[in-house]
Length: 65
Image (cartoon, rainbow, N blue to C red; front, side):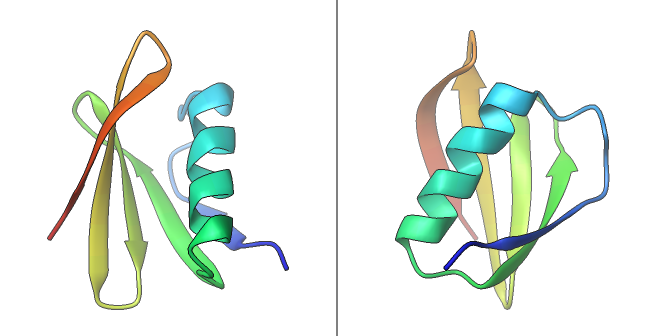
């Protein structure tokens, strides 16, 4: 199964998007909306907001709210 991503901001780094997609797929998320955030990739899936924080295109943290 792959995640159905709705990408709102086309400026999301493709490498970062691939990392986010793989993580969401591993967590069993079926659909998510992706936004470019301030030094992060903001992901909304259901009632969950996740902030994937990258430095030099390497994932350094994921924060949930």
